[in-house]
Amino acid sequence: LKKIGNLSRSWRVCRRITREIILKRVLFQVFMSGELSQERSLTSASGYVNYILQHKKIQLPIVPETCVIAYSDSFLKLAKERCDHRVIDIGSRKPTEVYFFRTDSGENFCAVSPQYGDAMAVTTLEELIALGNIAGQQQGSRGFQNFLSLGTTGHPTNKETPQLRVGDVLLVSRALSYEGSSSHYADADYEPRADKRLLAVLRGILSRRSVS
Image 1 (cartoon, one colour):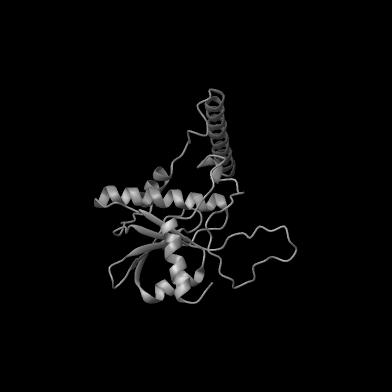
Image 2 (image 1 turned 90 degrees about the vertical axis):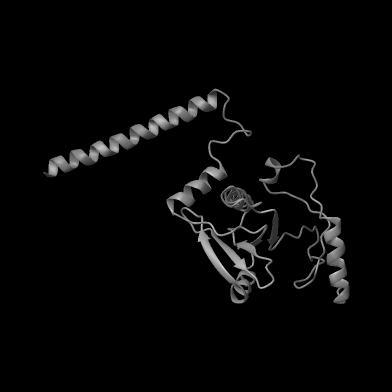
């Protein structure tokens, strides 16, 4: 029986190695044929999200138009204290919890707290877009239309002592992108700029609070 068990384990190992060799050979042939490029991916966010929803048997709540991507734990804590909510997890190896909040005013919204890093940020955004599209097809809704990111950002300076101090308020009109993901979504000379109407609204709020 011991010999049979050893043979069985050896056979399973051989099958796994054979499958890996075949998969690598297929990927190599696809790569050499030129079919693998930046314009074509072997996977898709919608395919992944569909798989997770079916595998975990998740029934989607009504998806609102606004989703907050929050890098601040305090925001999620406050929202959970003040609003009724439901949470679903669309993560595979690690949790990706999407909170669906219901407010008394009827202005419902979602919130998610992603992992840090530009690649993980854009992966989360792609999955949320796919989730909204899937919900839109199922529910006849528009899905997510607005994404609001709350969190931290860099402060580039060539001075030893930064001009900004902790607690200072900075109203940003444009940004510089030095990470490695944005170039796959925009031209190299693209300069991110804030919406002029939103800037005017924020200036008005800060002015009324005597923040200059």
